[in-house]
Length: 475
Image 1: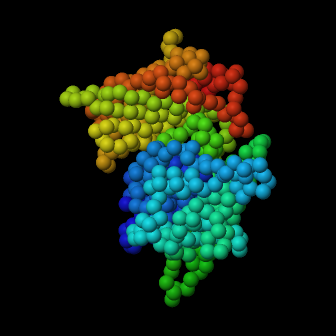
Image 2 (image 1 turned 45 degrees about the vertical axis):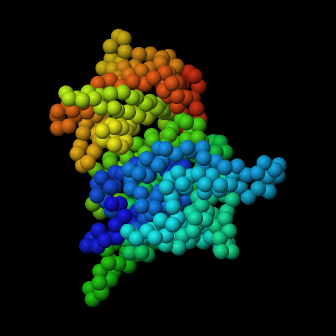
Image 3 (image 1 turned 180 degrees about the vertical axis):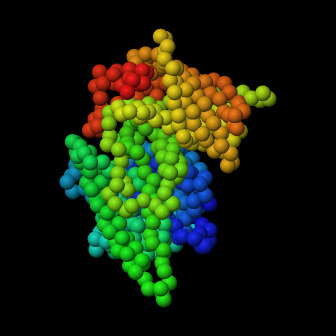
């Protein structure tokens, strides 16, 4: 159970801080699954901006697997709900270029966010941060008195969506003040802050209106976070100076889970360059890697805490395979989903994936990817290995596939099939071949793209060069 107000009574009081990041925050669902698997539970959950979606699902009683399933099934395009047509004839007078109807009527029900369940939630504390525009302040609304309008206002980014008037005051997304409310958690007694961060944080200033709008959010979010760190440092300093006659309070520790590279922006999600499933698998893999190496006393509260690797030219491709795997006694219906990211940096090939085995009853993300390649005159053969966990048991997933030419890759003619084996404790439980039909390969081709460091797409020549390098794995 991810939220449990009684489980941590003997030790530190933990708060899960779900920061913003737009529609890309299906990423956080993968993190939640990993936290549950590692038996990390929390007394308090705090959501800001897009983090409100996942905080709302947790407060509606959903667990990590259920939250991930909701994100996978969601039609992302339902986020966009337009204003009446006549308002677009006066664009400079609009309160927002979209309205909240899509979120209220489609997204919240699709994600299982239920304000009545939120109000009576009793397993711990949940807070939702909104900007009270009328007095230019942050309000952390406790779940028991939250209104649906508070949650919608909390994800209403100015220009994109209008603010909402609640009880006489105007409210909007809090991101321009802060994107993670660490101080609220500290004031509620938390001594361990687990921050899930998805806002970009790299040093280069990129061209283009979209990039620069995103940069404004990044500056505000990361700048606000640094101020939070400074306040917590003063609190920790005061606690270490408490006299022996007074009860010693524990210092506040910080733990951060974040992506290695900045996540793709919302337009990539809208246009199918990435999907919620891939983001979930990325979040899960990142969280498992981070948790395995997490220092017991947390990390320093400084600018490096949310730093990400500088974007490089990278190649992205999604694939989806279906079929049956055989054991000695029976056949298993299996689906396998992958999102491959190949970057122009040493050893930077990442293969995020998940597997659905019908007999297991749910889709399971994978972690700890390893790859080796064999090259012949005819093709390159890749062997990938992952691990996945089902009912607390660890399995190995081994996949083998061939890639022939860069042109075939660009035209969507590759990845017709993939050999697969599921292994547990050195014993092969099931094996066989999964296939990707023509329709899935064409859809995969639509997701195929190259991104340059400035966020722009690559030319045909660059696409060809990156496909060639992937096949040769010559970086």
